[in-house]
Image (tube, rainbow, N blue to C red):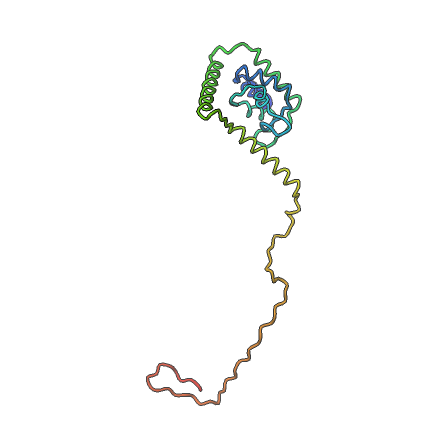
Length: 213
């Protein structure tokens, strides 16, 4: 048995991730590929969207499952903190895999049905949550990804504006009076000791020794 190359394995993983998507999501993704600029590495970067978000824009919202990671691995950006436009070849392979998945015989082992049932359960739970919260929808996953994308863009702009000159600036902090000539301290003349003086004898029992006076 021949071991698949990393590219072949990435393509196989992408196909498996596509097969796990509901049919309506695959159809929406196929339509979204033709009406959006497709990117890899993020849900959106301001210039385009990932295939999953393209499907969302076609009116189909589905849990991402393993597709985003499989797509990023196929495009070679997974784990590299890179966002870039997908190449024409990458989009073509994705389109072909989606079409083959849609035309493939239906799953007979119940796997697709189990996924569809799970999706229906999740959607029912989401609808309940919306009703309980007054139709207030919180898409945390998308919000987190958009925050990361915004942070990456901001860091890029800051790096461009600031440049690298700050790396070469001296960081030594000197006192305010550095370089100012200090006034010399006045000299104190020591008192000369007179060795001609007679010693003073203290009374008996005094603890101090005799001193000169």
